[in-house]
Length: 235
Image (cartoon, rainbow, N blue to C red):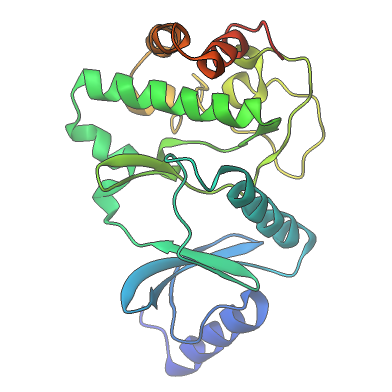
């Protein structure tokens, strides 16, 4: 059913009033605390995410800003094109560049590499003292041939003392109260997780990353510390 002109105008007014979206943006999807829209920035196609003034909306935007402060220099973080008062914009990519779709044409070796990449990203986040909270294949994109992660509104401090491979982003094991439940990246019971989408077992994925960490640790003290964290010797 086609929407009437009145309903379209009212819908656009709601986006602007509740989420602070640009008037000329195109709606993509929404939750009760955020909305995603298509925009144009400097003549280039972008995707904007804007947050409501609610408690969850303010917390989500604060987490996104914190993730940018912490991980802006990491090659695995989606670059932010522009920050706005109540949101931000990132490059707009093709749907087929999203990992849960892109992996359909990947070889098993490429899917294994993507799984090890996700575990490595979570190791970075864990080392900084946080959990991503919702790293899933549909939150990962191919940008210029490289995987990048998005959707950091669930970023929050982790509970100290829990070894990395038992931590919240890997297993869901973290007792700290959160406004939204954790979505572990490798949950075997979740059809949207890396476990099911990539079709690579947790043991195989962890072994692939550890082999790389061992090689890097032989010549880098920083890599040796990351290996110790991966192995649970540093928490």
